[in-house]
Image (tube, rainbow, N blue to C red; front, top):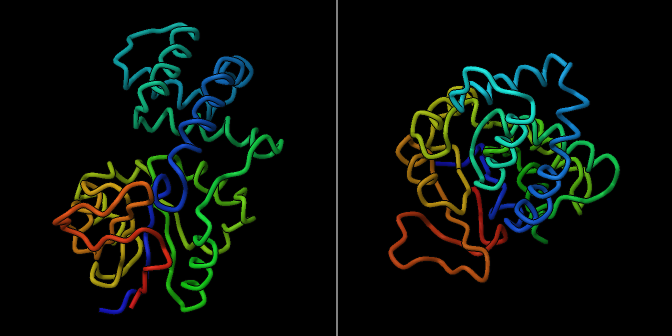
Length: 228
């Protein structure tokens, strides 16, 4: 039953939800119009704009209509893959200009390094795009942590509450579920991971508290996690 790989969520698990909601989302919303207007001729941007229009059911749409759609999705916290891809591109500019650094909880960097030193492979699974995940961990308050991670997964592999997503991740990781630990603050995500055979731990960051009768072991922070 030894844990050989740890798969972690970001928001509410390694990092505060408020950083994403109060810093990253407003930044993307503010800069979305200028980004689309100045990058719409780039093939990779054209692809995701077209995917956004397709997901919204637009037969045809003006550039302004697409911008307004994307901004509305940001307001709704829509887990739409085209939005997440475009947000990642916008956030890159903010990270590289030094406008912000990604928040992580105080013990996270030390525990990730400890687990890595114990030959535990580390992976990320977030609704944010893989690009956004890499940018996030490259620009944290504790420095660049990307070298600690073996791989990243986003919603292109599937929704975070679908059992099939975790089965697909296990296929990529190449390990049985009993040797993989998934960390998240969302019980429904943990339910799906557990159904796929993974071991699970619920994070209840203060002021949240561990729920009574939780179906998953629950801890307040990474310091209480021993992957063995």
